[in-house]
Image (cartoon, rainbow, N blue to C red; front, side):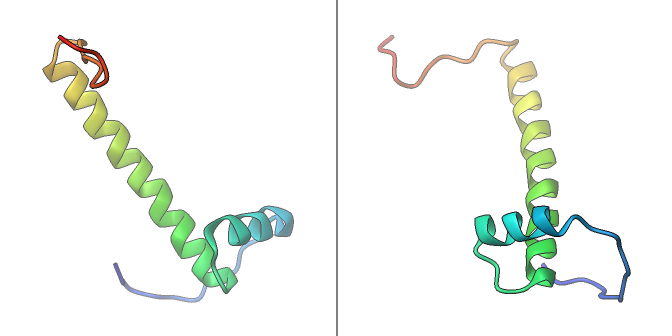
Length: 68
């Protein structure tokens, strides 16, 4: 998802940045930051969706691996 792009200047831990770049398979620092931001936003959305699912099921989620 592309959005408005602007130049920013941040102090950042280069060890963390390199670790994230390798973990994400990103080629550039910018790509690393974009992908990490997307992952963070997706994680929050997933947590919210899971919470809605649990509340809808009144806290009961049956294991898919168990036989009824």
